[in-house]
Length: 68
Image 1 (tube, one colour):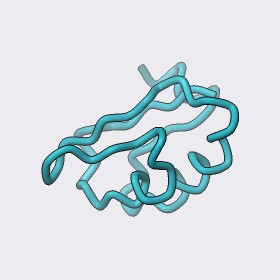
Image 2 (image 1 turned 90 degrees about the vertical axis):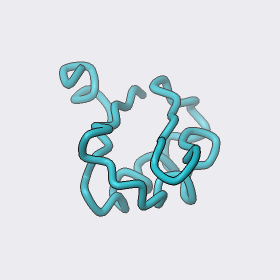
Image 3 (image 1 turned 120 degrees about the vertical axis):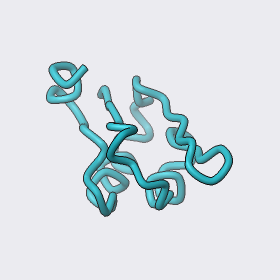
Image 4 (image 1 turned 90 degrees about the horizontal axis):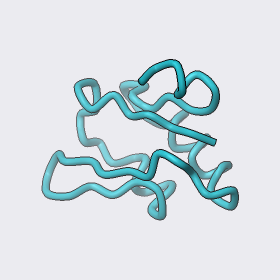
C-alpha cells in the first residue's frame, strides 16, 4: 500500500498520528512526517487514519501512485 499526504491541505489535526503512529508523526505544531510505503501490518490503521482526516488530505492505495 502506498500513501500520499497533500501537505498543503493538511491542517495538523494529528488524527492520523494518533491512529497510525508507526506511519504518521507530527513534528512541531504543524509539520507532518509520514512513511509513503505502508508496512502490511499497518494497512488497516492507515485506512482508519485516512477516513478520520477532517480535511481528507491522505490518499491511500492505487490512487496514491497517480497523485504524485
